[in-house]
Length: 623
Image (cartoon, rainbow, N blue to C red):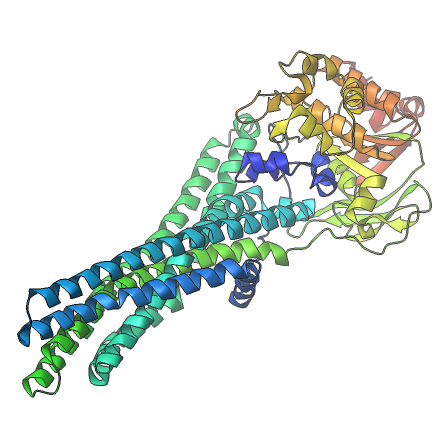
């Protein structure tokens, strides 16, 4: 579900085993590669972290590498001190020449300027080197936290938020945060230290000139305040609009067959244009903020230099200070323009990346599928009692459903599209909680079980599937990191995938996904089913899990799974009624209600809804 959204494929492959336990849910309930079934879930947004939470996260990341951070500060301070020498020495040269000293004195002072400039260059480059390494390490922590938090999200939260939002946060937002931590953060530190030392140097030369420079810079404050009050909101809106565009593109591409079949092309194009127009407006607004901010800043740089020259000139005319002091002070003020310009530019970048960091850090506030202290189920019996379910912004999907699934039973759930079969399967698997009533396993509510405990009880396999970046072995060991090659081949054989895997150039070591071998829909689904075999749950819910396989392969896979899971509970949500005929019992869903329940022969003999479906499946006309 989330591996395809990670920034680096190599990191994915190295983390397959480390995240295996939390990824078991993702192996069985993933976002589609070629899904033909549209989602009915209402969309909700993932949380956005408040500024205080972002500040705490930043402090936490800095403390994790405090030694490098301190080294960056120290080296920047040393570089700034070395940079103070040149303007002061230029002032000394002017005063020495006016005093009548010769070339020897000027050469010595010029050599000192060269030494100071070289020292400043070396110290600054050293500081940048350490700062960039610091930034890369922090970025790695941000990425790893993002992956961990994503894997901890309940599947229902991800589905309701939409893959577009999660993708935008995991790509564009994480990249923006990384650029800031690697570049903007160190640069901001460097230039802030330089400005402080330069301003202090002017005060040392002459307090009055220092006050003139400080008052001249005061003009920056109103512009900066105006910008900061609007920037965070503007960049958050821009990020949300980007997520909407990504969500619409992902949904349209993923449901392309449905869009084409239902002739929804114009609606999808119109929705895409609306999302792009909203994104354009938000980007124009942030551009407007920058077009006001930067020109105002450029003008404000000239004021301190002009003030120092005017006041310094008047004081020199009165004989209060030397010409060299005025020149040195003016050079310090002029030199300050570069660091100030860099600081204000980085502040603008911090507003954009701060909004991105708020979106990335917002995952920490999302609901998490954490372990609970729920009691251990007494047995494997599943009871559905008086269950009703309705989506947040929709009508009721299930109404007063009562069902008991006995341990080891093979139950088929059939019915027309929209009858509530998939919703029931999600409730049975603990993905969603019922609006009313209860779903229990061994007397314990399914939704109260922690992820690991739940997956040992119930696993949901849908027609949606995904091939993770990595080898065939990596893809399978996500479900069981300790599995041997013999276990892997046994799982592949169980689902009928061993033949095509053996034909691969490197067998289990063949790379799949981007840069590797492509897999078609049926092969990807067989890999997902093999992961289920390795996970070894006691109850397996198949929600049209073989929908993308041809009938012969699907029947072979279902029978192979049934043989491997002998003695375990199998609940099959099926459109192909041969699955129902092989089941111990058949449950018929109509309009959100359970209308028939019995064996295949009993329901055919009853001549009800199931019998009509069976006759239609075999091409028989109703009597």
